[in-house]
Image (tube, rainbow, N blue to C red):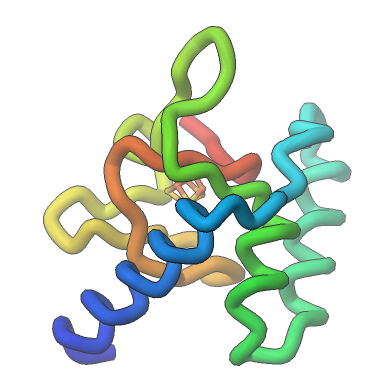
Length: 104
Ligand code: SF4
C-alpha cells in the first residue's frame, strides 16, 4: 500500500471510530486459544470489510482499560509507519489507539 493510501485508510478508520462505531472490546482473549479464535473470525471476513474488522478486533481510538493499554506498547506496532503488523489486521493505527489483539 502506498503512503497516501495508508493515510486515507487511517482517516477512514479514525472517522469510523470517532463516529461511535461499537466494537467488541470484550472479552479480551486471555489464552492462545481465545486469541486464535478471534484471528479465525478475522480471516473469514471479506478483505474489504473494514468495519467488521474494526468491530471484531475491538478497536478503540483511545488507550484502553485501567492500564491504559495502547498500540504503542504492542508487539505488532510499527512505530515509524504507524502500522499494525498483525497480518489479520494490517491497518494503519495511531500510537494511542488499541485493540483486543494487543500483545507485549
Ligand atoms: S494488534 Fe491491536 S493493539 Fe496491537 S498494534 Fe495492532 S491494532 Fe494496535
